[in-house]
Length: 254
Image (cartoon, rainbow, N blue to C red; front, side):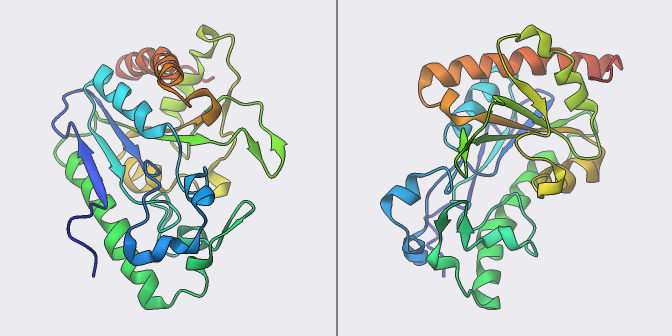
């Protein structure tokens, strides 16, 4: 049974009065002791495969600026990726990029269900708890970071703005991209809906009719406090006017 002292999820500023609710599915690289480190090396447990470096720190600054609640997973995505449904092969993947995850090979149905129950469901329930009663004026933002080199190929994009079927907030943010002429900002890069990365947007945004967006920041830009502060301010440069445009109904196609 899980150690009750170990949290699967944390909710920060739950009563924040701003319009935005922020999710961070890959905030932590913590692997609870019962999973025996998934038989990974220390290096692999610290790598981007295990979490999104800098994403939680970005959420904290955005939360302060926007008075936004934050729901963040406290467990490595290699144990369970909270941005995937239980029936997804990537929810408990046995390989991430070039890294094998021995502790995820050959999981039984019972072992998979234990992770669903102890990691996925608590995260989803925490999000539901925050969103409940806020109404349709809330806006959902999920925060992620990505590696600058993937399978040996450098990635030029610096800020990815991802959307599923509801593109309202993505359109409004992309319309502000000229305010950051030094940044490479792209829609649905380095991932998009076809990669199965929009589960949280669908589950908690589309299902409630909430405007929503997934943000991806290249993690070499947020490796220290200065970088996090810089990128948080740049995200706000895109997001704050976008929220105003949504509120006034003046969103233009990007």
